[in-house]
Image (cartoon, rainbow, N blue to C red; front, side):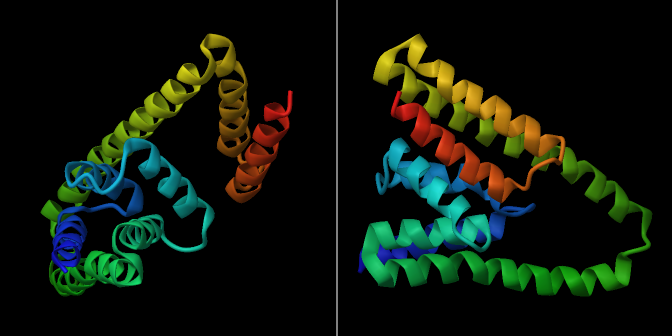
Length: 184
């Protein structure tokens, strides 16, 4: 029962204190999971992969899967609702304030300053995840083992950035390429 209260508090705090969506929430979710020893770094990455692969918002999927992993179905429900409720209240309040002050010059300055902060948070998560994943690959077989994952990552990033392939197809292609390369 105490775990459910801890889950509720952790995800409500994350939902209340983050701006910018699911990618921005990932560092906070990761920190909470490791601080409470609910998940290891590897388990967090696995849940993150599942969250990306399932339909729906990334942070909500992550909260649901973490809650389920920690406390079963009650944990999944508590974590999901705890993450969503503060955001819902904040959006309602921000909507009321926005209607009143949307043309004020200070609002555009505030929003302009938040964009690079969110980009930095997303970049930090990406770099941390790369370090962990590449570290796992390196431990599995040294530098030669890193060649295939790096080639797949660069190829997928290139086709997605240039807009030639949908991220869903890139995800499926990366999974197939990884499966094929693992057979070599």
